[in-house]
Image 1 (cartoon, rainbow, N blue to C red):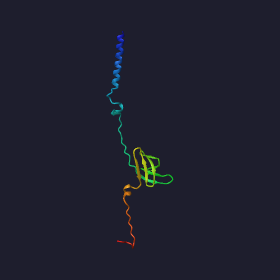
Image 2 (cartoon, helix red, strand yellow):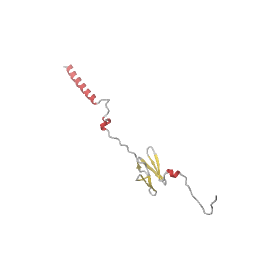
Image 3 (cartoon, rainbow, N blue to C red):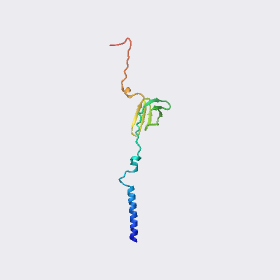
Image 4 (cartoon, rainbow, N blue to C red):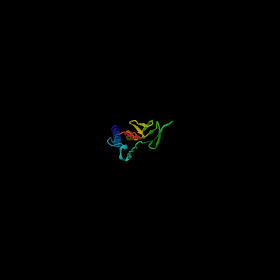
Length: 123
């Protein structure tokens, strides 16, 4: 009787273990990794930041990418750190950007002054 009881218990235990092992196959990918549960990833490319307007006064404000911002505001992961007469300083966790109203290529070219005076032209 004891051996029959032991066989029934061992048989039940083996059946339970085999059922659990079949459900939790260690080589089977987890459910979240299956193709059925995946959603397509959409990559969003941020448009370049463009300073469009700058207004100094009691409270300096700027327009960047059609958004009105003041010091401390955020845009595309950047915080607006400083507004001055030439532009703005933006900082993110990994980058710092300086935006100006005047194209930097134009600012780096030397200005050419054309001066002529009547009657006093030396050659």
